[in-house]
Length: 548
Image (cartoon, rainbow, N blue to C red):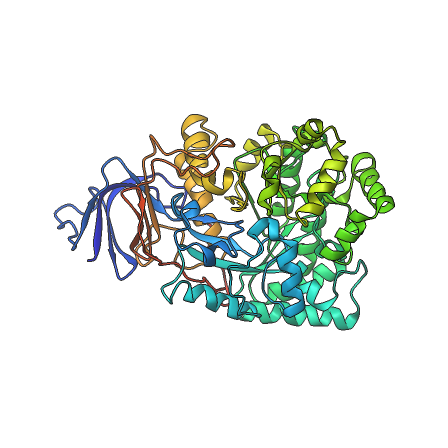
């Protein structure tokens, strides 16, 4: 064989008890799992290389169910932000906004809209237009060698609406809806695993339920799933969850709830209400899963906080409204007094909005302070400061939003359909530490330190369960015949190195990561291996059963 990992404590991704075993790898796949004592008298597997895993746990590679590495994978061949965490597969195209399918007009608009997530993209050759061409570009990676980790893609519903409808807040016409159906079908045929929405982001939020239901019917025909960032995580959170459950039940489409949580003061301690809603739907036959990150603050763009009417027409229209004194005052009143839909129906609290990144280096002094702190320093009102930032940085600032509740985070991560997703935005001078620390944070803080989950349960949440949602027949478990996407970590020391003060510190306690049997992390250091590829949708048919 190519490699034998000897005397590992195998946590196999099913949720079942761990066991000691030798694991053999050849040709990028697991060929042997020989449990200790299971085959008395058998010769132990031999290989060209033997790795002694004494004291280490061996698990499947972690699957990041909510990632924003759409351009980072093409920009950074190292990509240690994810590789060093043990992530071997990321699901991108999230929140209804990404870079395929596009035409020339839409590409320019989406690049401007999500500059805060991925940067302006001036260093990227946007040679693709279709979903299939984008996936081919990921396969090609750097000089044809590939990318740092594997990637699966969700068709972004907001981008699809940009193409067919534009930035108008109105129902789609019959012709426009039919075009959107075709675009979604094309993307699914070309390999997307499902469709995402950002229903607090424009223009995706302008879609009514009937429109979303029709698009979900197409997704379901191709064996995909719908992943909405739904209409509210604040004042209308439970109603928004109910809306998504009902919509996908009508469409016959599996539902995966993006970064599912209950935020803002109105939802403190209300996670059990959400879980009861999901349990009732699951008992009635719904196909539902969700992902969360193990932190309380959220992260998005500052422009996303605006009311939807202020964003109609796209980036240039937003800037024009912000420049107009009368319109800007209407925006302020909506945000501070009424509660904008962009801020989940809750009046904005400027002392919870921390600037985490800007595009213009001259604005760097704002980073690391809340909007209120910067306003106090400048002798301005918070809205004046926020407005100036949006205009001067051309909608580029990213923010941390400190509105979460620890008891909600813990309750939701225990649920049987939970998976892990970083929602990691990698840009900015002070990004959210979840981008670099989500998976070791689960294993270190919530397994070892707090005991919220057992090690076996947690690994299943991060591996086998998301692989089942993605319908991957040969990933997510330590099992003979499966791809050798594997992580070796020390349960006694694994921890997130990233903090809010130093968000780009790499984790500890993860010395080895393999993709297709090749070492991406070896002895705790990033190698030059580029084993990642685009992971395309499996053909329709019975999905693999979830683990456990």
